[in-house]
Length: 232
Image 1 (spheres, rainbow, N blue to C red):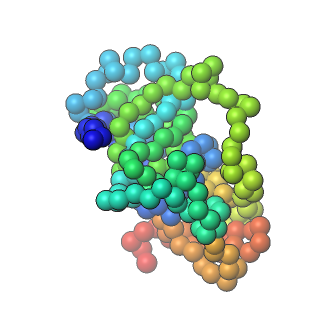
Image 2: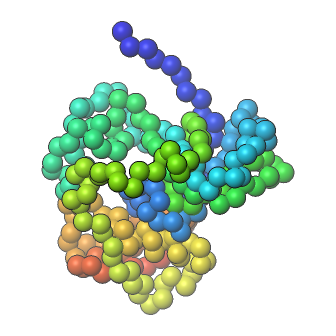
Image 3: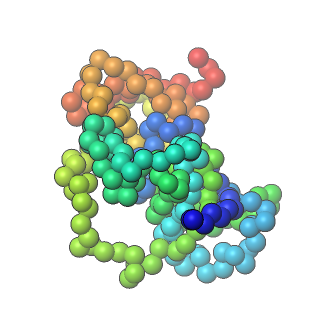
């Protein structure tokens, strides 16, 4: 009989992604993406963060809170393989796992002491949806955590998507520079499912309070329109 135990949510992520579509498939792919970690009062003790300022990167352990299932499958179909090839769940980072736990390495930009919210961690390169529960934080230690000679399995065979991003009619002018850089980085990674490639299809995603509409033709992604949510 296996053991079960309860994990405590120590905080949550505040990011520009209200939904899963568009989120980078791995942390660190879009370094321009900014986010914050807001802590629950029970764990918002200044002493808990003593020494963390000396680390440039941290590990986040979190919950796939929007991918919870009663049962699990030993195989999954990774989207980057076209969604039609099965791999063992433990050979992937699929959210559909025996335990819905995610792991991300992000850059720690700064530690802020807010009068109302207490300690806030400002991070970049996160691949988490807004509101994602955070279970734990650990420092990234280069001499122990970095393996430049490591093999990437079947992921080494997958072409790394890099699209040229074009904004029609300068529609990106309504975005502040930080959001524009983050959005451009996200779109350059090609957020579409691998099995969708129609150049005539217009996709829509929410990002930072805006609805982004775009299409992709070969290696060029064209942003058709950017509109603040609630204005259409």
